[in-house]
Length: 558
Image 1 (tube, rainbow, N blue to C red):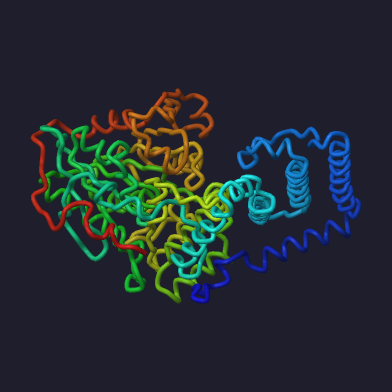
Image 2 (spheres, rainbow, N blue to C red):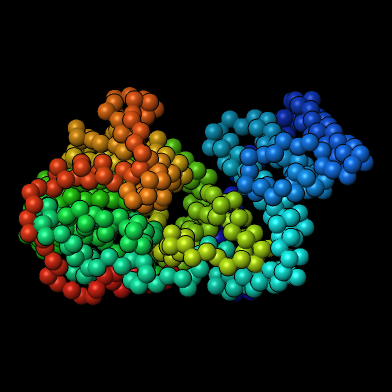
């Protein structure tokens, strides 16, 4: 633990300005409305005393727990939370404490909406952190397991804890998946193909055809460089890339280099230039004049900027574009708003100035706390208190196989795209051009996910609305940022919405006028894509091979 990396204080917590806003709001409340503070305390202590009295009465009568309404919370699914007097008391008191914290935060008179939302977010973090399930003495599942195993579960839990601290080089990041269960290129990321082009930034992979005929127009997929491309190529049964190939398409995908300090000066200009470069290479290899492009998450944001630049240049090599869970209008930053303020962004700038890049570990920690109960506290309980081995789960394995981000690109993305919202408002500077969303005028399809906490669908829709294309299609999938996209037709798990309402009204108008369909959106998208992909021709096999898929860059660890 002595080797834990020293980071800028700005990436470890909010700056003093937020604490000052809270203190000022509390002092204002105390001086102008002291009765309101007293009311808070009276309510809290009144609820607590009534709860204590009810618990004592039930215990004195028949050694039972008082009647308590069961919360709709899977953390408290053990029946002892309702039948055991001690655990019932602890659970109810936690609910009372949590309610008091929420009310206290809500009662603060804070005019700034950003500060208000940040305070609410940090309050939720404290409430989640202090749940009784997070402590051994008040977790019946952990104590039952310890008794059943004669303490072995606690020994295994300590071993898991030590392993994670050592793996994180002093930083504790709980393992979400068995690190030894998967090998990229062996049991995940196995769609056959060849690396047909390589630069210092990327490898371009062309997949082998699985059909005798393919559509004339090839497809290139740009995955986010914040993650590795094989999220779209996990196991064969849920691989989006394999499915696209099976539908009769010549498919290319970019596999990004995992950057280190030597890539500190890579900027958004370099990524857009890389887009233009591989578009040209894919067209050269297929001897076609146009292709269809797909961008996922931040790669979709960059694709929109690239398309606007190509519009200004009169470059029509992209025939249509598809955006997966893409934000282009950052006027509302959703749950990331907490981290996109000057205190955190300034801390990130200090960090990348020192190291040259933003580490994958720091990003994983940040993303995890957006869903703390699912990605931090729940896994920690299972691993450290129950002594369970992390599951062999392909998606969570990918989640832990992160990538670094180049320092200059990070600063541009956070300051210009996220904070200044340049692409949707004043224009974003790329390769000497100032580009705007309205300059994306080719046929496009956007896929968003209903419970996406990274790219909320309402904000994704708002960006598509501002694009200049007359031919716009929007699909809304159930579930979140990953599961909503990696949703194969063979598993009728999550449905999706289509709508003919258009973009003249609001996102809610679109949704209310839409139609729900059972199962995956993949078929609807392929129907849209096939109409823009030309006639069927003889299948094309890769004519060059620098290495077999999945290539070499995807194997590099951060």
